Length: 61
Image 1 (cartoon, rainbow, N blue to C red):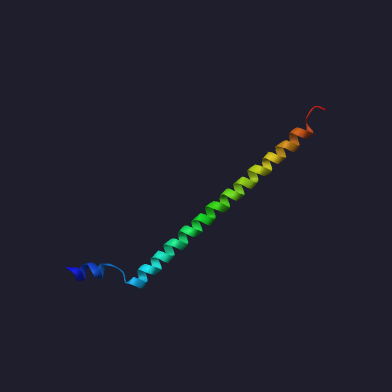
Image 2: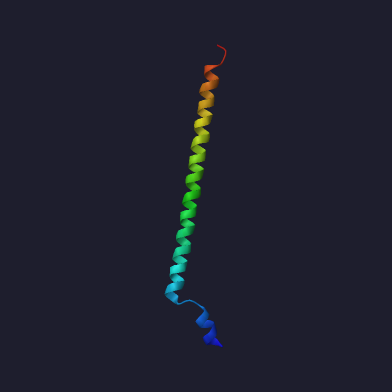
């Protein structure tokens, strides 16, 4: 019975490769999410600055 369970599990090196691959994909996903937030945040900040300039230009003096 033990032999059948061992045969269904991948070899140790294969398991390590899969763990490394999973870890790398999580890291890549995290970087992509951070880059998305940075891009979105930068555009939001730039829009706010643009709005300040627009309102300042059209303010009654």
